[in-house]
Image (cartoon, rainbow, N blue to C red; front, side, top):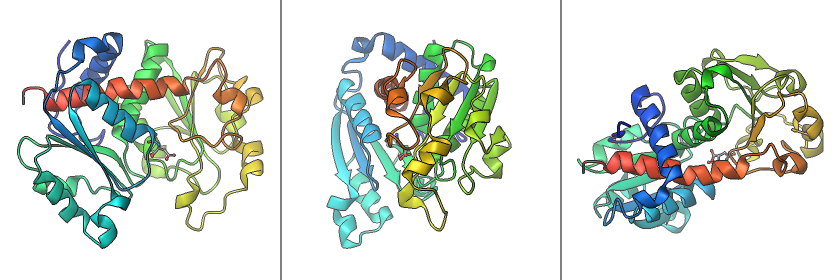
Length: 307
Ligand code: NCD
């Protein structure tokens, strides 16, 4: 296996497909034998800088780094000088001055990471843990790694992503990665007003009805409605949304037998997904979480290789 090498990991579009493939292979290798990588990045320092709430992404980057023997510092914008009016650039430059090898940044605005590269010293690495509604590349990789564990040949499967696509950086990065890797068929389904936009939709078959969209698919990925970001979009209340767009056992029965159910989290049970489905035998939701640690170990290994 060729070891992937990255200077930064900012989005799927700016990462060569050869490195994306090598990252997935390394993620699978780490998953098979995590003990081989224990302490591989000893004495390196990672800072998690999060301007938005996070459970899975922040904690799994932290656990990944700890497994590799790194030291980790967590900075939540709400408890930092950001609350005193410090700009992102000043906060970022301040943290860089303390000499971490890796900064993992989540931010509510689109495309902030590229604009910080001029403040990133040689030998320091920047990772995108989600920006606005634009990109969430480590989530895309862990999702594809999870799919690969269940289906050998991506070109032979059909993947449906359903729910609030409009606000979803998971969808944008996921679609970009699945396309780059040559997935067989990609379907997108969303309520009116929550579509992904033309740039994403041109890569997929687009549906406005979940019952039709789910017919015969191998993978169903459900997304929550990002109510905290809805600006002027009318979305039905929770019960009505569940009736029209919830993944129920009856709807799931229309997918291919053996289809897997995914969700990047956080879930709103009883809204976009029925509890019986979330906890049912076809759900791989907690597997996604577990794989996120291994995949993020692979990303850190690729950044720090050769340093
Ligand atoms: C998502 C995110 O923050 O983009 N969660 C995650 O990182 N696993 C999706 C969401 O907030 O709904």
